[in-house]
Length: 189
Length: 149
Image (cartoon, rainbow over all chains, first blue to last red):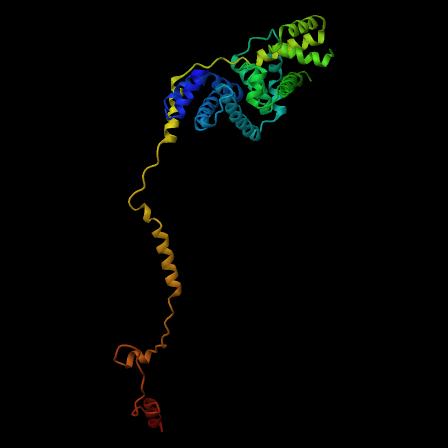
């Protein structure tokens, strides 16, 4: 972390190439979060680039009390959340049609001894179900389940209290389980 | 501890957020509570199914694209040409021309007749002067009438 702070000082003094080191150090983390939130690899790459660009532009405003990774997560979370909100406004697909087509697959996805199903179909279905969550629900689940952030880290990224993190996480988990259940129940009706 | 509070702790156990004592307490509870155990297992299965993201492979190409974007953003704008400072003159001249056209007074002219133009040899407006020799009657008509009469 001390090295990272020294690197940031160098960048702020005008050494643009030093920023490449920061990008190398954090690209996997940022890309992973973007991919988990947005679902598409191409979108995730574009979003990750935009995140690093935004971070460079506002590097002077980075307060050194928190870790640089926390600050970067915050920028990533806000950027992806905006993209998800735009996307949910454009969503035209009928929920019923989605349930009808994918209910059986959703059931198989959640049973421990599921049939062998092509990875791509399963991954499409996962993305469909995750896209039914609100951007905030998807974000907090991703921070926890994909990025492995602790409650404290999530509170710093999301700028809320620990209790708020626990409550949001609880609601998001419940929402995901309900969405997955709706998919499987629609086939059994 | 009431059951609702214990449910929260079950998730905290799953998330690795409990200290040693709290962890032992919840694990003991899970052994005896079917509902909480089912909830724990259900979430573990769901999380495994939904959140198995592979780690992205670091890419130097990605780093280069970010740095290229930053360089483009920081590139200084091209210096203005020698006439850039006079660009304001074009709309100013246009406006002046319009104002000038609107303010020019309309010239008053005398109406010009065909006689004026044909009978007067001098440039400018001509005048039509009747000659005293010109009869008041039509000569041809008079001749014709006299012939018959």
